[in-house]
Length: 206
Image 1 (cartoon, rainbow, N blue to C red):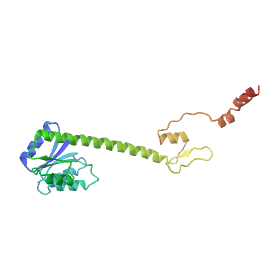
Image 2: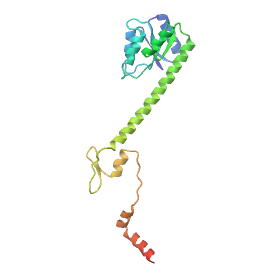
Image 3: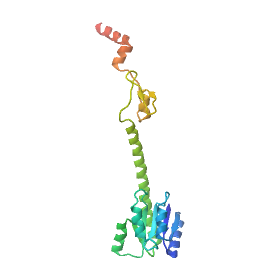
Image 4: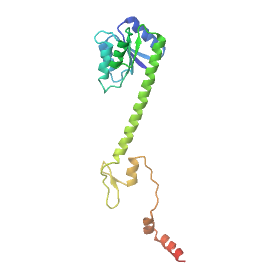
């Protein structure tokens, strides 16, 4: 997973990066609030970020608030890194939009556990997003069969959006998951194969 680290303290930054790289993660490093905000606004931004609370330019909470105010961005999972361990500070961080927090100096085992939680949630978000896309495609197919469909009064062919006329079954098959099996209704059977009905009538009379 690509993970953004935003930490102005060099020692903490190096330690965080070393632990994450050792676990196989790809790490992107920034040292200020504005740099972190810019990195998270990129089209292919990391989906998980560790932001220090106190940073030059913008603090971590302000970065979180601005990211959460941009609904067009894929929501990153954000962990606030802080020396503030009081309940009021933790509540403030979560209310600003952070998903989790990690106290400094951090424990590598705790860091890995919180990263694992974030990874699971991101995976669920991606699966949900894929399912939503599939549902949208299904709705688009349904919409193509709604509204007024031009149909010939004589041969019953249907005119498509490009102006071509096609058989009803071909048109419906292209715009849905429907498959056709052909048969003959009683009226058409009598019209096209009258001998079948005559034989049946003769048998009944006899």
